Amino acid sequence: MQTIGKTFEEIQIGDTASFTKTITETDVYLFAGISGDLNPAHVDEETAKTTSFKTRIAHGALVAGLISTVLGTKLPGNGTIYLAQTSNFTAPVHFNDTITATVTVKEKTERKRVILDTVCTNQNGEVVIQGEATVLCPRLPKTE
Amino acid sequence: MQTIGKTFEEIQIGDTASFTKTITETDVYLFAGISGDLNPAHVDEETAKTTSFKTRIAHGALVAGLISTVLGTKLPGNGTIYLAQTSNFTAPVHFNDTITATVTVKEKTERKRVILDTVCTNQNGEVVIQGEATVLCPRLPKTE
Amino acid sequence: MQTIGKTFEEIQIGDTASFTKTITETDVYLFAGISGDLNPAHVDEETAKTTSFKTRIAHGALVAGLISTVLGTKLPGNGTIYLAQTSNFTAPVHFNDTITATVTVKEKTERKRVILDTVCTNQNGEVVIQGEATVLCPRLPKTE
Amino acid sequence: MQTIGKTFEEIQIGDTASFTKTITETDVYLFAGISGDLNPAHVDEETAKTTSFKTRIAHGALVAGLISTVLGTKLPGNGTIYLAQTSNFTAPVHFNDTITATVTVKEKTERKRVILDTVCTNQNGEVVIQGEATVLCPRLPKTE
Image (cartoon, rainbow over all chains, first blue to last red; front, side):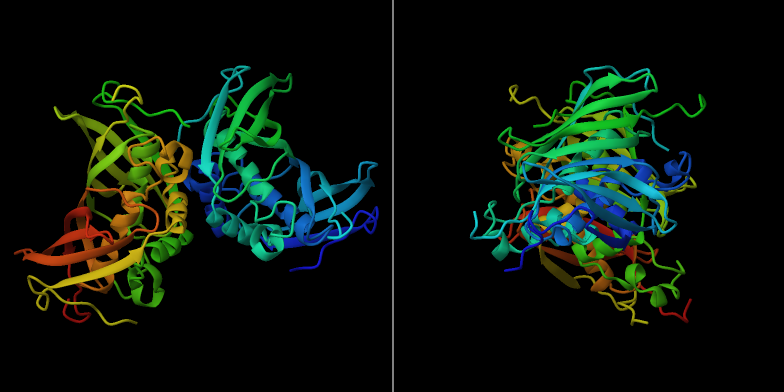
């Protein structure tokens, strides 16, 4: 059993948290198998050379996964229910880019939803994904 | 080198494609490592038993990855550039659920974006993710 | 439920399809674990340096797997039953080689078997595996 | 550095070796990503239910990989060069079947090739793959 994250009452507008990981070829190749997405942009270097990206890139959906990592393990944390996500894929992620996913609380709604800005940046500070998450905060076991 | 998918000129409103996969414990555990999302809801059965879902569930971001599979490998297909995705996570995905991701073209914009309805359903026909993708279609190598 | 591939009646001599993937260290290391083939030629760089290949190479059986990908997902496609395969391993596959597996129908037998030429080439057009597959085409659900 | 396997001079007709592994869902799901073969027969339980096999089965190419394990790590062993393989897929392999790959030397040719019978059986003794391998035995480092 693990302790829960921040409840709706505890979480505050402006609260922020992040998680950083270098995205490797291994991540991309495993994700290709998990998702079934063996698009040549991700796994065929010869075809990828001919694209505007010039080389294989990571799946956007893989990188977006780092956002759920922050939401589910840091802020709000354990017990969070993920309701919705919007993502704009603003720049490609190359193998060995180090990506930081950051979430920042921007709204607490009347229906007890929490809305967070979600952004992923690479090691050069360039935004690669920008969007918004909607979550339900963890609830205390006995107060339901 | 691989042939490209449907161009903006070829793709039509109402075009649809899908991909189906049974989501297993293996998928969830590998995705936990790739994303870093080791939220107990996904990898801690004892804690998961105490949640409203009663057992471990798959990551929403993993399941959303099936949508990018259809976009990048079927419709529009090879050469697609993924610009944006919205996802509402409407029901949990349990281990061994068989998920079908279906995309359907609903709009071709003046700026040559294509907007598709994206829906993931389980083996009982229940919608688990509902949303919308925005993509750029593949372009013929010489027409740029 | 997914639509089936080409039936025996539909498939024609000369029909061809291919699949391309860059074979990485990740692929080789995962396949070593799956197959149990931890031959130093694949996973021990120091020993591999002393061989005629001068470095670690991919497993032939891994590369041959790309052939089954084309058969099972493209031609004949979903529903194909794989009866037999012959493979001659004609050149080594190095880490990061981009391999294209191509199958071409060469014979339709009286007993409704389909025989296909199967060849894998690298990014330089060199043949790395050459052989022949025997399959049963998918059958329509109700015609049996 | 590792010691080499049996040389052409040392190996004898009738020599035999085997390797056994339980093939799991994890093996099949990883191999799907490595090979790109996400055929519904392997990863879509709902579609697989409607086939003659009634459930998902392992990739034949994955199971055939166990043969190369025996050749490369046991007989002839380290230093073996794999020239050719024929495989007849005689029965499906289900998740959690325990497969034994056995190779038996049947011929030493004038051109110093060794030909081995290769057979994979399941836990019930049923033959799932039957075929023949052609290899070059390891050579002593200094005698070349």
